[in-house]
Length: 311
Image 1: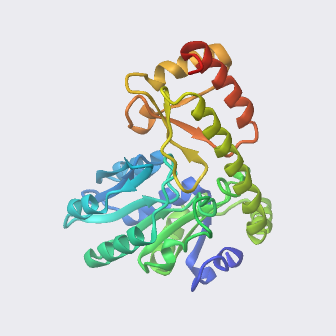
Image 2: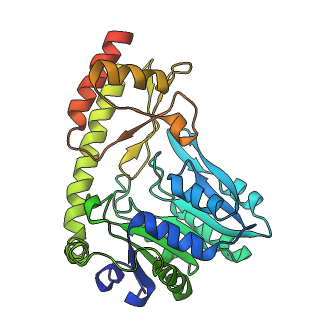
Image 3: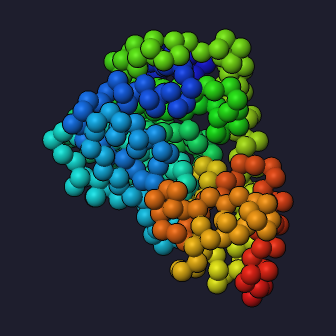
C-alpha cells in the first residue's frame, strides 16, 4: 500500500485497498450502492462496470463515447442532463476500453465540477493509465483532482502482469476505502503474500515497465495503421490517445460478426465484434498489447486481400 500511495499526490497508505481488479470494482460498488439508486456509466464499458450496479438493484444509464472528427468524445452535456436526484455514482474509464479515448483536461474539469455540484462520487477505472501515447506525459489520476473520486488501477493491463491478480482502489476519502475493505472480509479476506511481494517490486519499477509496454503499443499501432492504409474502402480507424485497445470499423453493411466467423475458420485468428460492446456490427476491437500482433495482422491481411482485393 505504501508503494502504491507513493504514485499519487496527497495519498497515504490508509487510503489504498489492495485486491484483484475485478474484486475492487465489486467491493466499491456493492459497498456504495443500494437498490433503487441511479448510476451513470460511460459506455461501452468493461462488463462489470454495468452489471454490478444492475445486480445491486440500480437503474443504469449508459452515456456513450461517440466518434467525432478523427477521434472519440465523451458527451458531458448529456451526462449532466441525465443526473437525477437519486444518482449515486458516475462511472468513467480513462484511457477508455475499447476506444482509446483519454479524457482531456477540460472534460475532467467539467466532470469534477458537475459531480461536486450534485454531491456525487465518481468511480474512475484507470487500469490503462500510463499508456497515454497521445500525450507527452501521463495525466494526473482523477482522485488527485476530485476528493470524492475513487480510482481503480492495477498490474494486469499497463504493467502486463495479470497473473498476479493485484489491483488497487485509491481515494482521498477514507470512508470509501474502509467500506470496501469491510466487504472484503466476506470475499477473499486477504491477497496471496507471494503475489503482493512481486507486485510491490513491479509498482516500484512502474516507470521502467510502462516504458516497455508503451513502446510495444506504439509499434503495434503503427503496424495497424499501415494495414488500414491498404484497405481504405474497407477499414476506418478513429484513433484514441491512450490504452492498449482501439475500436476501428468496417465499411457500412459489412458485419464484424460475419468476418469474425470467417476469419477463425480461414486463418485461425480471433476478432472481437463490436456487438459484444453494444456497438454497431461494423465495429471491432483490436488489442495493441501483444507481441504477436504483427503476425496476427499478416493473417488478417491475407483474409482481406482474398475477399476484398488490394485497392
